[in-house]
Length: 426
Picture 1 (cartoon, rainbow, N blue to C red):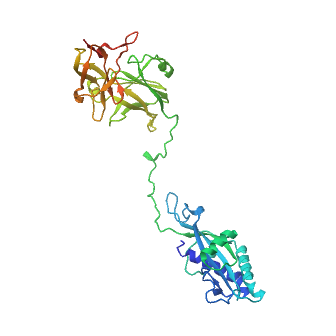
Picture 2 (cartoon, rainbow, N blue to C red):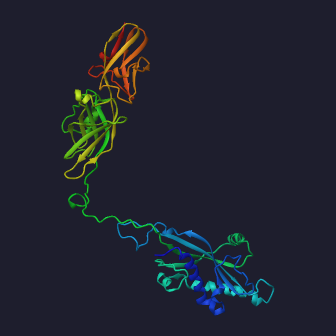
């Protein structure tokens, strides 16, 4: 594993690479190849030949940013990615007495050292990982699993000028290089799950689901309360029947869709606002239609609540897992009865009964009378106060969570209002 010393190790490696492969032959000593900031590179040796390799910038390496080291994690395990860095160096050469007026040969010595150093880096574009461990470093860098690549990074005159302005020293002819990648191994532990003893029930492995997934398109409530579609049950025949704007308890509901046939089929209805979910008994079914009953027994009425519901079909084939369809919405309207159908003009105390019984906690109940809404004086008993009602016949409706009772006599032809929901004031 490579450790945080890899940054200093790479710098020292490049210094030795320059010294042993070209600069030593030009008479430079190893200590003449430095790694100091440019404003300190000359130091006390103003009259000495020197090559300076300064690390001026570090940047994350995108290629290694999200990849774990291959020798750290086995298949199925997860390891934290190493810190991968690209190192940016500035290579500068100084000749003896080039800061003072003198012979041209003295002034050009720095350029000679710069050209020799550039040739060395050009001839060694890749330092193999196996060679890194063989070269003595200070400090010890550990095991670098990736090769180190040296690439020239040309900077424009403007970029170079800004860089040297940052150093706050006199400009010297320089060359920039990118060196990648330096890996610093993470100290986060590898997450190794326990061995798998069996795959699924009875060690049967992954279950493959075949066939289409159940899909619902719409929910339809029959105008007459029950569907009269012939056998075989088909969605097109069902759509030809007149539908009601909302369903009622004691009636039927049809779910139309695709892939609804299976060895085991069930339908659930979940209230949109209340923590209420019911399973609906299936009356008839085919591949694209399921007709369910909305039970109107006393036990069922105690479970229902008026409002909007989301219906879902659950289909199972053989030993495969059960598949749930998407949910479609339908409205369940309250069926109301007036305690009295005739009242004298003036203020009227009106009491209703409803099936299912309303309201439940959290439900909004309003009486629709004439051209407005009237809030109940006693929500639990569905009692309302009607003020200054003149003589006339008035259709009464109850609105629960945005769903209105159905005041129409659906058996009458032509259509007419239900006489049991008309208040006669006379």
